[in-house]
Picture 1: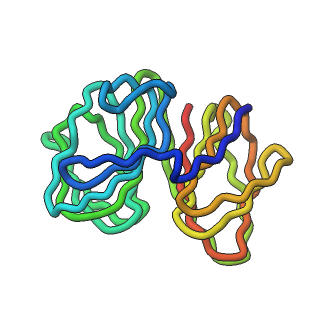
Picture 2: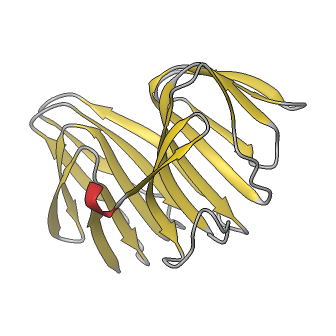
Length: 192
């Protein structure tokens, strides 16, 4: 099992037509978004224009969660959905997708046979939570949206601050004990 904490100094930010995007993680390590040769990419994005068009990425499956703001996302010929904070939309990146509204979002892009689960946990101050990933989860990502959280994973203790990404690779994690003296929000990504 490999466990790493990635901080903003590890991330790459670039511009896109509707704002900016910050790549938090890409696999394989030598893959690039520009070459579209990744199997997994996790990022956040700021949508700063009122109307935006998503980049077409044939063969890529995406899950998108709103962190701040609201958008109405339309997949031409498929469906339209209004997304508020921590709502998730799942779609194929070869669909023609547009959005109205501004937001900060969290993106999980996968290719091939990989599948993902994306969800958010919100807890009040001085609370404990036991996270139980799906038993087929092969890579686990934890991204605090607020607060500082304390984790116990495989009998080791970790402290994770908002904006950092904990990556647990090649592991069969049965549970993660989470607690915080302050309220916290946590984005969880499970890759199967």
